[in-house]
Length: 319
Image (cartoon, rainbow, N blue to C red):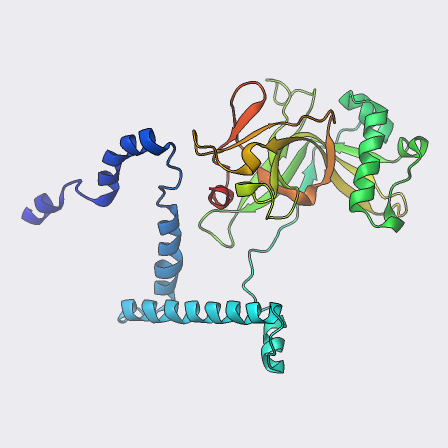
């Protein structure tokens, strides 16, 4: 009982840090980097998983040895890959090992995306424009631009608007995408991005979700690493002009642009995005560029703050 009384206190580091938060916020702003999630991830990978692999006999020593070996192997592979990129003279067996799929440090397996919620009143590009209330000229212009930038020359859509408006189209209302769960490598969360445009979604009104898409290389857009925020306008399939059995799964998005080159602001410590200045109603992209749903907080009429995403992995990559 004396031991319980001696140890029943709140004098530990997590509680002590709370006493410094108010001063820190007043001096330097938001504190998104003060998080225990990285420590929780390390605890799972370095301690729990390795303990399960041990024989439970002197487990601490086995955990340290196992993690040290894994870390040494990873560092060796990274060094060899760096030497290979710089043209170093490596032996044939090393090159063969680097090219084998088991030697690379790979990420989780990318799962396929599923489009759902077919609307029966749309069968051509002309119907597509009528349902969305978008001019046929705008749709054809964006389809042509998407075709030039994303499709090989032999598979590009026709430039003639009369042919474009008769192409077969299937309009959908939901994209289901599997996103790797935070603190996991083989567990997935399901993100359901919906867009009903003017149609009611479960009575309260229309639904057009915010999504995060890969728009450029990871060296661009600061902390966003080439990802941009966008409002989902439409999801649709368009049949390949050159091959009737092939379809392109695409989305119409109203893109936002990053403020301050995509770096967090000094006031909030969060990335700020705004409506684009150009007059384009939407941009067409492949659904394969989607990273998942996004969560934005309005800041005025044309600005939003990029806050915690629904999967914590992406939030920690940005912040």
